Every structure is written in structure tokens, then in C-alpha cells.
Amino acid sequence: MAGPTASGKSALALALARRLGGTIINADAMQCYRELRIITARPSPEDEALAPHRLYGVRAASEPANAAWWREAALAEMTRAEFPILCGGTGMYFSALVNGIVNIPEPEPAAREEARRLIAEIGAQALHVKLDPETAQKLKPGDSQRIARAYEVLLSTGKGLAYWQSQPTDKLTGWRLKMILLDPPRPALREAIETRFTAMLDQGALEEVRDFLALGLDPALPLMRAHGVPELGAYLRGEISLEDAKARAVLVTHQYTKRQGTWFRHQKLVSSSDMQIIHSRIGNFTQLSESFTADLVNFINCPG
Image: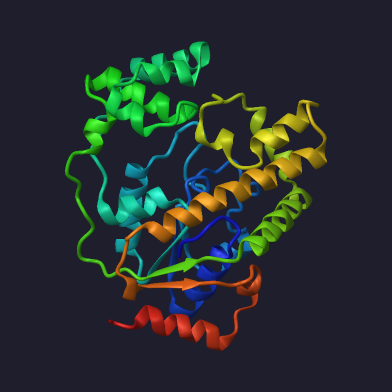
């Protein structure tokens, strides 16, 4: 179950899990952390009580997750589940599951500290210049997280990240995958993002972010950049109004969904006969019709 943020994946996955006796396995990079349930739109405790949910809120924000960790954990949960349903919008996770992942040596702690020190002192663009040419060509000069990651790998191994990424991978075997890709119209998706962010504020997202930022965690950690965290953080520091924070968060999220949609539409994770693309207005999946659910179940169960 894949698609952009706010496209209705969680509601649809829950409906199918209840119909098929399935276990929902998280494939969203931000929802694996435990500190921010509201702002990352993790399933509610009430939804989690309706069907088994796995890999939601299982890591501390101070322990960055990556695709290698997720693939191993997801495969373990898939093996234990009677009917696994992977649900999320992190394309890199789905690709890692299907295509395998490069076995990059774990960087030395000293290399990681040096990379973060340089990011703080000289900035991402200056550190980008220090990377090997092959890796630098693949990274945007302003992408501090990936640049720091590439630099710590280079320091630890003597080889650039591009070298490791070119090595053979262990592709998924022994599983038959069916992909349901949600691809709602852009105006409807923008409306859904705005509606959902308003609901998040009503549910206590501002207080959740305030408590989270009070932990004083490393700004380079992935969860520190979850959609809504930088914007609400700016409001809490008195730099912008709450309305401006909301508008910025909605805009950033919508821009991100464009990249998500493009990525999923161009990936060949399964054959065309094993993928169903659903174009729908957001919100319909909270009240799924019996016929629509039955159609999806037939698609999932179809052997060809």
C-alpha cells in the first residue's frame, strides 16, 4: 500500500487488514519513531486495536532508522504475519525491500562526529565539495543529512558512498507482491493535507512538538525535520505566527507529495499486472463501500 502523504493509505490498509485478517507493517520513515505520534500521522491507539500494527513507534528519535534496519525488521514481521500489508510513503523502503540493499560498512563513531561537526561549522555546501566526485554528483549541495552520511562513510571506509551503492544486492525472493498505489488528484491532496494539519493542531500537535524540541536532540536527526516540526518550532520561538507556520507546513508537505508521486509512478517494483493505481478523492477510504473493498480483495488474491 503506497502513495503520497495524506492519500488515505492508513485507512485503506486498515480496512483491508480487517477484511483479510492482515497485519499492517509500517513503511514510513517517520512513523517508526515513538516521540511524535500526532505530527507524523501514526495510526491512533483506537485504529491499532482494530488490527495488528507493526514497526510503528518502535525507535527513539535519537536512534536514526535507515533502509537497512527497516528491511530486516520488515522481513521478520512479514514472515511472522499470516497476511502482511506494508503501508507507507517512503519509496526508498519499498525499493530496499524488493531490490535489496547495499551492505555499507557502519561508519566509525569518530567519523560520524566529524561529519556532524563539519556540517555545523562549514555547512553542507562546503562539505559537499569534500566528497568523492561520483558521490557528490548524486547529491544536492544543500542536502545536509545525505552529505553528512556520505562523508562519514568516506572517512570510515576510504571509499565513496557511490562505490558501495554500485555493489550487488540481495533481491527479494520467495514472495509474491501486489501493490496498490494511491494517486489522488493534486487539488484534493492539497485540501487533505491542510485539513489534516488543522486536525493535528486540534489534537495537540503543537504541545507534542514543544515537548519534543525540549529534549534538545541533535538538529541533524531525521525526526527533527518531520513535516510540521521546523515550522511549529519557528512559531514556538516567536519567529512566525501560527497561521504562517501552518501555511508553510502545508506547502512543504504538498511539495513533498509531488516528489513521492513521481517516484512511485516511475519505479518498477512489481509487474504492471501486480499493481493497481487508484485515483480517488481523499477521505473516501474512511467509509469504504463493500463493493470497492471486495474489488481490492479480488485484485490482491488474483494469482495472475
